[in-house]
Image (cartoon, rainbow, N blue to C red; front, top):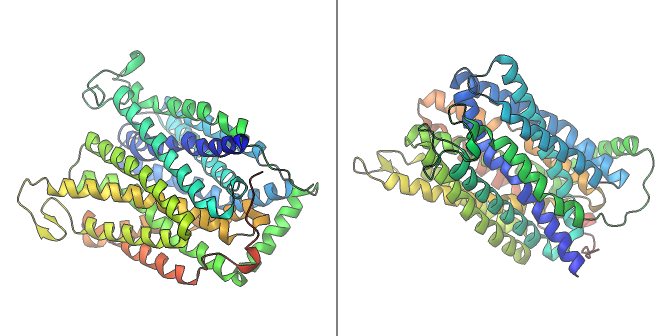
Length: 453
């Protein structure tokens, strides 16, 4: 029993270890720094950043199912995860060299390094997610997944606070708590902010150790030596059979759309707050802390409800919550809240947006955790890594839709506020497609509940 609990904790700590790449690098610290200070100007910086994310996403989408199929046939996942971890650490550490107003060669190096780390992150998640069914019985998957995601949010929250309080300098050269960056880092060269790369790499390197020590692979049947050929053959068979496995097919389509909408909220939430409400970097950082803190609670609670009622009701509720949040956001700016005018200088729009941030954290975290357990129920238990590869593929194949629709709506309306309205449509489509998803998955995949190894 002790060994089994350690195995679960090791798996949870992988979420804790990898979360700073999303929180610190992709959302709140490095991405804004790169576009505003490293690139020649914010417009070209945003364009370069977008192309880099598109290319790394394409690489993930194309190869994730293939690598998953190979891993399922070779029976070895830990060695793959070790390799993805190396990419993560190298990519994150290299961001230290993102000096202000960098030359073109340095900018290219930074973009390639970030993409390498991003690919390591995404593939690592595919392979570690596939371990979930072996951690407990079917009825426990929701609790395990939700708690893991909650622990990840807490890790992201703590890492964000450390960065804002001790390292990341503002325009005045001091951190959130009014001190110079620690360790004698030079504010003029933005060394405090650039330290986010090595900090993220070290965070991962330290906290991923329990995963490799405690999460041993369960005994698996001897696999064929030609894992590559067999994996590709079975992946082809899986893709051809997808239309016949209607529940899995519908779920991949639904999650592809609602996860794209969720990523749209994450990507444009800070931009919206800065452009529409005029928030400072500090306010956006507080917004992120609130979202992560409430998100941790939401993930844990969602996991409890998932284990009791199944993941589908949790997913439906979270989509409805996020859809409502989008409506509130569209109806809120400096002059109004929920389309109702407010007094000039009122703090009510700020308060409402902070609440929206909390709801995004709670709903988004619980949605992702429940989506992970839903995939486990939908996929062939003997091809689980391949299933998560397809899940990664579906999450990336239309990843350009939400940003593209937001850009188009913003251009047509000339309004940042109205520009986010397509997210409402995407959430609604994802919700409708869930009608064809069976709560327990395909009958032939409803294997006996997994017992702890």
